Image (cartoon, rainbow, N blue to C red; front, side):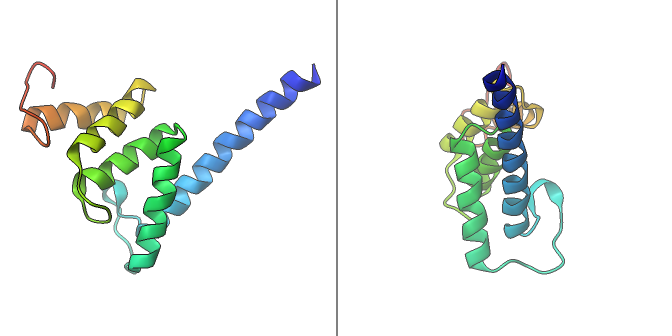
Length: 122
């Protein structure tokens, strides 16, 4: 019984840590994800650290982290642009039910952004 209860507690704490890490990464990136505008631009070192945190979240299976990492890969502002990897991470987040990534996949296919235009896939 204790293990089952503590397992739920551990899962909840892990989720809370992911949320905090996500917010820190967005802050280090200058709050520019999802249309936010920063008061003071981040340094290159802060952006690099934010990108590193976001990639870690994505690789750990965090849907918001995968979506945000895909944004970074797609835009190429902080990390080298790679539309194929962006699509991969958006698929990872979308398969977990993350709506923003579902939208981004459709947009990429509709516009032919890094993939062949495909209105059926969009």
